[in-house]
Image (tube, rainbow, N blue to C red; front, side, top):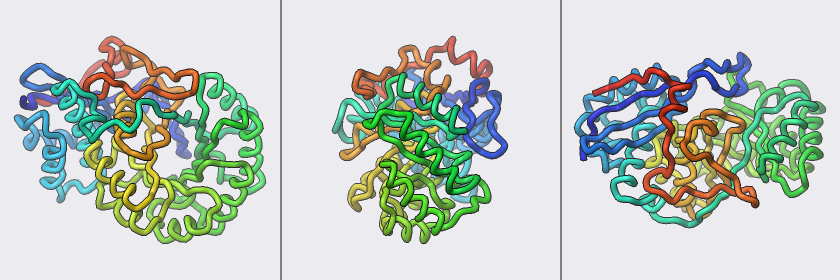
Length: 377
């Protein structure tokens, strides 16, 4: 079975604001789906956390290396793409595109074998997992209402991130966390994401250490991205003294970039994003290296339905997986699939047992967000 063509599908019209100072309009192009077609008629789905124009440019670079390749050898094919584009890749848009291609090839192999991707990644350690509803911080009143709505949708864990947390003063940060803790039942886990990968992040280790102490008073499950993403020494120092687990790693790409973070125990919880870091092939390698060093892994996913499906399959195959991130509300998750994701009475998601990623995109729903795909053949 050979790769015959690729469709690049930029998603616009319902983009969720990601928390950056300039904001994100619904028409902004932040997520891109891929469909990889084979000469035997099977189609694999992938997702990239990168704009369509960047993905299209990267696929144009990669297509001569990809056309006619085996559609059921994801690790070999994606690693060949990576090794063959070092001078124009080693991260950035090229690696993001390789990520989506890799996910699509795993989906294809699962469909060809009649098996869910999780089994092909090594086997199922679980069939359900807890999603955490991922939202932005807001002023206390709107934040409380949003938290209550997320709980009403069945989530038993919620992460709050980015503005205005960390952008005013310590008293206001504590007000936000206190508001959140009072707004949800005691058994709902709360996580805090400072968003230290925002441009020109102003805070250092002292702010992070003092903030972590405050968060511990409110039983926060983890403190995410409290420092800029290149400050590995700062993370090492903070993780040693923080009373709450420290999480990070969403901006890293390629397994080699993750290695020092794992070996130096720079974080308690590593957060690889398979739609950016090289796909499921790289995420599997990263996760097992982390497991061997007793570092927890929770996939990052400011995501699409395809990205969430990939995270679910990945999490099924990792021994100590605890959560998957579920951006909510998000039309690119909730309004694309033929069969929607549903939380059960325990607030858990079933990991789809069907072949491949276990989901199907509804073509008519997709047209709402991507009327004109970009085709390479």
